[in-house]
Image (cartoon, rainbow, N blue to C red; front, side, top):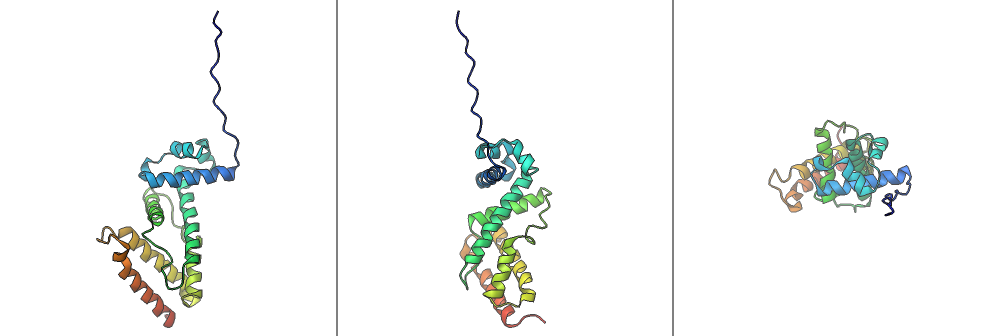
Length: 194
């Protein structure tokens, strides 16, 4: 008589904390949106890369799009740190940086998917960091600094997003637009609106 053996049970994943699981899922999602079209990034793909059960995406985030919003928020935190470290007289954000481009495109894609992205900038440290920069470094009147930061983000997003459509292929092509914006900032500093 031949003794039958049962196949070995698959190894169980070691338990992780929610914070660790969320961090892994966000990092995995960020990696995958760099590698594939957003529509081709699935919950199971993200979870497999993160080594987290795919059900936790829905438990912790609600949906794939909510997880992608968490990716955007994390990137905005990193951009805010970049703004804070930028030298006076230098652009605070490089809108041609591949990490910036991907997060901008991700925000636009989420918006087109019907995700409410309306509060992303209002509650984000990137807007606060630019506002502080305009007050402290550029000496812009605090009463208009936040609106100036909103304009800067709008101009940068537009230039970075639509540069290829407008025939601007390199950062040097966008430089005249940024130089003009630097001039406007200087004027706002010297001659604040009444």
